[in-house]
Length: 222
Image (cartoon, rainbow, N blue to C red; front, side, top):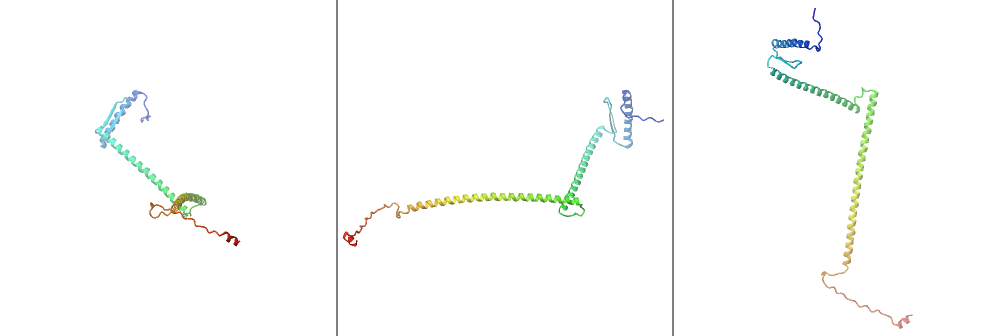
């Protein structure tokens, strides 16, 4: 009659638990030693009991085994990280390629190419997209034209202001020149000669005698 199947769970009885721990610990250490000898493996075994007591076995130096373990663990972690990163980038590249292909197909369809495989609903959707795009282009064109007209109006106002300012300056300069000429003309009416310091000689002319007819001749004529 074979042995019954043992349920693997914590043993509540402390005495039975301690006996089982001793038996299985010795068996585990024996198996580790046999594995190291038979298979020429580098084996390190560490056991802590429930009371904190240490039991260990190593086929060589426990320190060298632990260092080797840490080194292999770091390398495995790096390889795993590199593999995960490569996989992530490959997945991202595949997604981008799919998006690019979809955009290229959509662009060709908007340009009126490769429409043979589309149904009525898809063609209607494509037509709606073209109409929306056309409205957007017209709206943008109107906006640009309005901005250009406003800019031209602003430049026209600036040119008009500059013309008005130039006209005002010319008018003021003309008025100033005309006033200077009038003053110069009133001074040059008097001839002072070549020497401005020469004394001026004034002469009073005698009135010319008037000829009167005699009373007799006047009576005669009458």
